[in-house]
Image (tube, rainbow over the protein chains, first blue to last red):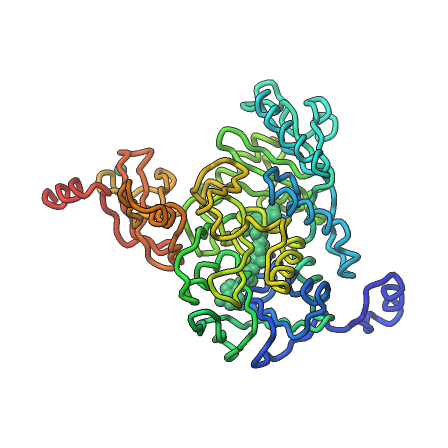
Length: 422
Length: 94
Ligand SMILES: Cc1cc2nc3c(=O)[nH]c(=O)nc-3n(C[C@H](O)[C@H](O)[C@H](O)COP(=O)(O)OP(=O)(O)OC[C@H]3O[C@@H](n4cnc5c(N)ncnc54)[C@H](O)[C@@H]3O)c2cc1C
Ligand SMILES: [Zn+2]
């Protein structure tokens, strides 16, 4: 595999770019692996990478029913932040942000991580109080946070709606400067390439269609490319978790599959340098500008459960209304594309990373809206869980049984209704 | 756009309705065991295919409805009033 370096870029400039090789192999599946990870999204690929890198494990496969990064990995709005407040989430997402800061070097692949700051707007004095509490918690636990006044925001982001007749006047903002965006496809490719270099088999077009198990263990996975046995099996299939869980005859989960849409406009000149989030009185909207110039934005889920990767019109209207009330200057910009992904919404809005009722099965699911920013830490801690067969302290409450113990990791305080945890 | 045929108001865009959730959950009696309550409150079948779910015709007659819908395609197969007595009355007077 050719390493990316300034030297190699120059060298290949002289030889017609002929010196580059495939980014990862395309192996036939073997009949047996030590570890099989189902799902070639960011979490599955990152897990495989850290299993190989941190624990020197060999004989690992990632099986993906379509192409890697074709699920939510390649459909999200790429916001990365660590402004979580509750124990467990706080440490986990902070660890993730720290991993992001060195990820391009770690993977020898430019994931275009851009720490352009996450600006959470607030519109009432009491919302600012709540925000100050959150950011104080963050600052006391090793993260960064700032409160910006209306005047500061006006100077830094002049195109927002500061009009006197704005329905929700901007009072201030919570800012996390280390937050930002990255190129989602590059993250999938970067992890795939780096894992492949350490010997991981990445097997695409390989759907798990049924599962054979004994009372205590998964004995084999039936796939569209043949039967595969594994000592350990890990699920990282996001919106399809319940389906795999039921293939293994494990019953019901505290998860619902919903769909979340994303939107991008035609490219325009640089307009917005930050990630801006607008959430007040039922409105929910987040926007940034991609390096190509498109305005990338999204809002709420479509509210009803769905496995269809297709969104519906009321949310298009919702999001367009939010866009115009926040940035009226976007009024004549045309929408270029919009799409939808199936998100695994959990009962308290937080994820599950845990052992399961079966001895050799591990679960990674329940990412709601926040699984992109979680990817590096998800791979890191999930690899640790699989390799050592016990959860790290940071994720010890992210198990399926937490509700029985009365533990709810509910950042919004929205209660046990998955659709409310946007 | 999904359209739901409200038994009172006729076919309307789903933006007039508000989604409730699973229509097949039966909450246990108050003195049922904690385990039974845990399962009813926190666990979901998360059906891939046809399911019964509740919607309310919020910007119409405000009835709660039981809708049979496919979560893979959003196709709707049947709509009934959630209140079984009213549904019966409706059928008798059709
Ligand atoms: C529109 C949208 C916007 C989002 N915005 C953000 C954001 O701004 N910030 C953020 O942090 N998060 C965001 N998210 C959430 C984030 O994208 C997801 O939580 C995250 O990508 C999920 O992890 P993953 O990448 O491993 O999932 P996926 O990429 O969905 O990977 C799961 C893989 O499993 C495969 N699979 C499923 N069933 C099988 C089977 N039977 N056999 C084999 N393979 C199977 C699928 O094909 C898929 O590739 C957003 C999500 C969406 C949909
Ligand atoms: Zn009606």
